[in-house]
Image (cartoon, rainbow, N blue to C red):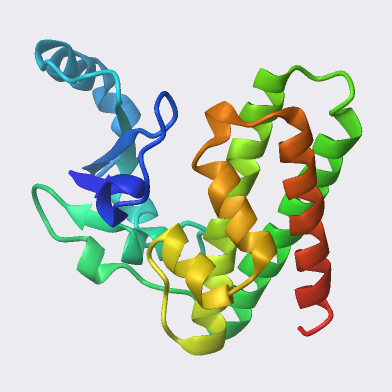
Length: 203
């Protein structure tokens, strides 16, 4: 059993969005044990903020996965074998591929967000931007690791290291996303796109 993400790192809690993500690791395909998993969780009195995800052991700490860095740096073993300390990371070439493709995808999704902002509801804008701003920080952390060899575990640490008004703005909008207007979200998206364009020229 492994806790992963904001629960481990201490990133700010956002009402209705932050979840306590728990991986249930199985030696084989967990789908074969779904009925048992359901029975166990049904008996337990977990609050709504918990989110359990069954996962085969072979998929955790896999160097080929874009989540390999989260497995290694944003996870904590709660029970059973300590797989976190065994998590593998990709080589430098694969690392660059992961964050480069990831940041391009974030930029494209933010373009789509801006394009559709005129007729999307504020709630839909919040939901869409929440996901992309989270992904932004995930891939920027991987990029920082590739450049410096040191992985920033929290979004706040990433923001401080990059010392960018655009990224600080994304940090603030992300962690107050339930209270943002469409205008504020669009401005932040434009600023982030500009930042990503600038760092892309330095690669």
